[in-house]
Length: 192
Image (cartoon, rainbow, N blue to C red; front, side, top):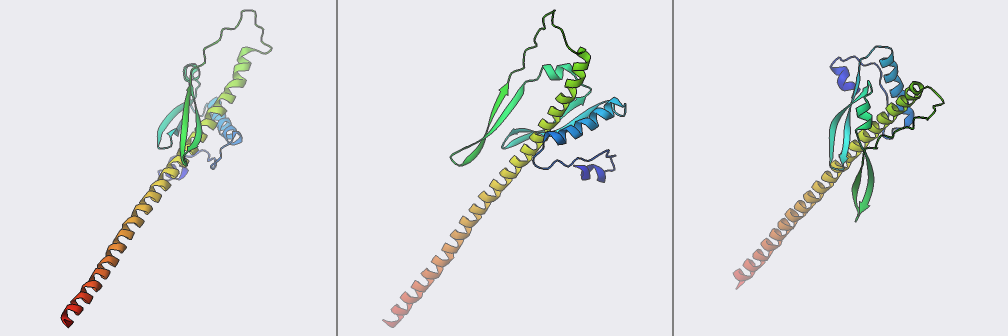
């Protein structure tokens, strides 16, 4: 990713190495960088481009606006849960979509220990961190699914090639045996 943009001379502010097992510590470092650049006024908005995991055979490029936060983004989108399964030796993915949580009304006499603005300001970084971690994990899952798919295709192609080579070898061997039989029969006929 970074080398692509570096070759095209895009300015790169910072590079984060996340590997194949992204964790909340890595996501926190990214989210802190995003929040700091947004709050300092260096950026007006941050959009994240990532590979959305759809299934073991499909993924799709997606864009998600991280900041500024949108209440509709948070309250109008459901969630998905993916579970890797295996049946009869084949991998599969079960996908379960969760409904959007209904907004709850707070009782009028509810007392907040802290100022509601302070509560929101402490929750939103956690939300951003969770969104970044999710997109990192979806991108890794998409990459691993693509690798599994390409390895399966390579394995299937190798089996087909081995079968075709075996057939060619058997035909050549059969032709040689047939030729020897014809020579023996011809030799026997000539002696008669």
